[in-house]
Length: 348
Image (tube, rainbow, N blue to C red; front, side, top):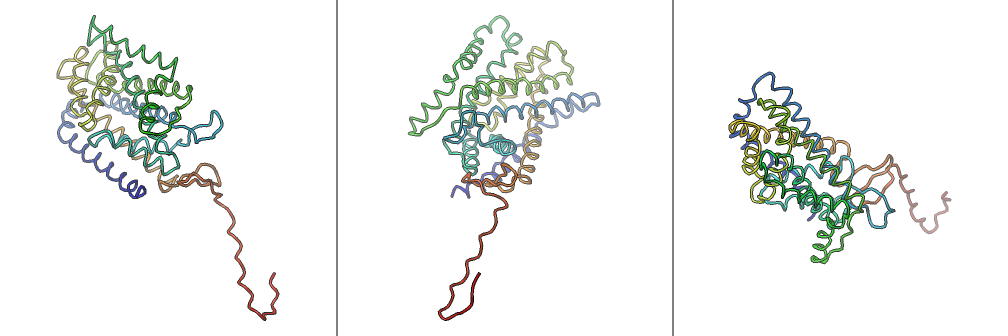
C-alpha cells in the first residue's frame, strides 16, 4: 500500500504544480512580461532567477541536516538523506505546496523517506522542525523591510530576533515542541544534535537573504533606486512568504504573497510598479522551482535509479530497508542434484 501511494504521489504532485502554474501564467504572466520586455531587463532577470535557485539549494541543506542519523550511529554521523536523494525529496515537497493544505508536504517526505529506510517519525519531526525554523528565520529577515514599511513603529519586531538568538543559545527551545508533540502522539523522536539545529538556522537565514535578492533584482529592472530598495525587497519577500504560509487553504499563498510584497515595496516603488514586481517575483519563483525540480528529478532518476534504490558507495546498493548489498557479490554455487541410489559417478 505504501509503495503504491509513493508511486502515485509523485505524478499527482507534478501534475497539480503544472496546472497551477498554467493558471498563474495565463492570468498574471503577461502583466509582468510586458513590464520587463526590454533588453536592459535581461541581466537583472537572469540574476533574479539565479538568486532564487541559490536560495533553494541552501534551503535543501537547511532541511537535510535536521534528518537524524540511524539509531545507534556514532556521534557526528551525518543523516542518511544526502545529495541528490535529499534534493529529490525536498523538491517534491516543494511542488506539493501547489495543492491546498500543508499535509501533502509531510506525506511526500514521509513516503519517500520510508523508501530509503528513514522512519516516518524521523522524517515528520525533521519536516516540522524545518518548517518552524523557516518561519522563525523568515520573520527575522523580514526586519529588513521594517524601517520602510513601519517607520517609527517597528521596534516590536525585534521579538523574532530575540527568539532566534535564544534558539541558537539553547536549541532545545526549537526542538522541544516537536518532541512534545511526538510524545502526545505516543511516538519517540530523537531531536537532532544542537550543532545540527544551529547549522540549520544559519543555513535558513542564508537561504532567505539569497532568495530575497531576486526581488531586489526585479525592483532594479523596474527602475527602483539600488540602495534604498535593497532592504525593503529582501525583507518584503521573507515577510510575504511567511504570511502566505499561514494561508493553508490557498495553494502556495497565491494572492496573499503578492499583496504583501506590493505593500512592502510601496515605499521603494510606485504602487503599480510594486504590484508588477510582486507578480514578476511569483513568475521567477515558479520558474526556478519547476526548473530546479525538473533537473533534480531527472538527475536522480538517472543516477539513483528507482525511488526505492540509491547508490551510497562504489560497489554497494542501498535498498528501502537500508541494508547494504555488494553490487558484485558472486552468485551462490549451484547445489548438485541428489545422487540416485546405485549411481556410481563421482561428483567433485
